[in-house]
Length: 110
Image 1: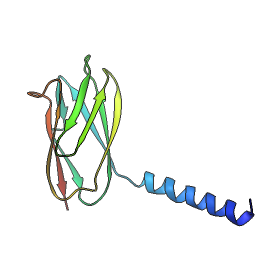
Image 2 (image 1 turned 180 degrees about the horizontal axis):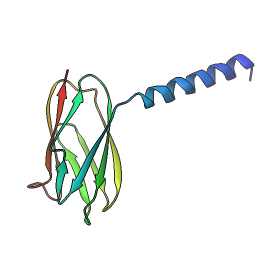
Image 3 (image 1 turned 135 degrees about the vertical axis):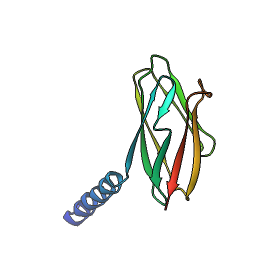
């Protein structure tokens, strides 16, 4: 491998890690079978990282038909869900095991 190809590999890896670090991160907490915040505001047109923490003693499944996502969260566990880039609007999410109480909205603003 030449010095130039090693340099190009390093630059590519650096650019990729910078792109990942640039994604905005938002926290979502599940406690008492309710999501907090109930409305999470994120910017339009960018991919975002949602970090969901389950403080309940039971599992929950983060579900969103609007976002085409579902992810199981163990009791006391955390998961990461990537969404976007999204157009401005309101996107519902809910807990599949407690859909009457575990509800919220991802509000996407320009």
